[in-house]
Image 1 (cartoon, one colour):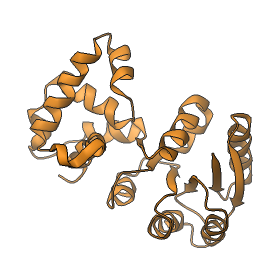
Image 2 (cartoon, helix red, strand yellow; image 1 turned 30 degrees about the vertical axis):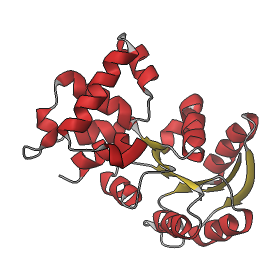
Image 3 (cartoon, one colour; image 1 turned 45 degrees about the horizontal axis):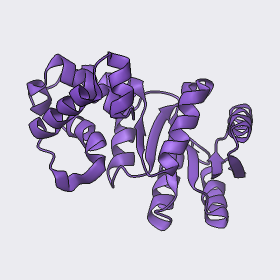
Amino acid sequence: MRVVIGEDSVLLREGAVRLLEEAGIEVVGQAGDAEDLVRKVRAHKPDVAIVDIRMPPDNSDDGLRAAAAVREELPGTGILVLSQYVEEHYAVRLLADGSEGVGYLLKDRIAEVDRFLDAVRRVADGGSVLDPEVVAQMLGRRREEGPLDTLTEREREVLKAMAEGQTNKQIAAEMFVSERAVERHVTAIFQKLGLSDGDGGHRRVLAVLTYLRE
C-alpha cells in the first residue's frame, strides 16, 4: 500500500509516517500545505491520501478542499481526513459525493495505532470510516423527530458501531451476541431508514448520513 500524507505539524506528520512505515505501509510523499499535497498525490497516485482538514495557506478548510479535488481527479485514491476537533459539517461535506474509500478521524486516533492503521487499510480497500466521537455526537444531539426515532435502543447501538466502521462480526463480539442477531438488527435499521438493496454495501454509512441530514 502506498500513502501520501498532508499535515502541517512536522511532529505529528513524522509520527504518523513512522507508524505507517513500521506497519509495512509505504509513505511515498509528504506535504505541509494543501497545494503541495495535491501535487504529491498527482505525482505518486497513492492508494490513500491522509489529509489534515486545516492546512496552509489559509488554515481553514484547505485540506478538505484539496481532498475534494483529489477525489474528483483521482477517484481511485482513498481519502482519510484528520481533524483536531469534532466537526460534523466537515464529515457531511466529505461524504456528500459518496462514502466509498472515505474516512474521517480525530487526530488523537493516531495514538491508537491499531485503530489508525485499520482505518487506513479500510479506506484503501474502498470502505468507509467515521470517528466514534463524531458518531456519538450525531446520535446524541437533540433534533426533531425523524426516522432514527423509530430505532430501538439496541438498533441505535448497532448503528453507532456500524458508523465507526465495525463489521457485523466485530459488533457481535463486542455485544456478546451472535452474528446472525446483528444481521437482523442491521436489516431492521436499513428498513426503518428506507435504505434499499440498490444502495449496496454503503448503506452502513448512508444510515448515519440519514441522521446527519435531518
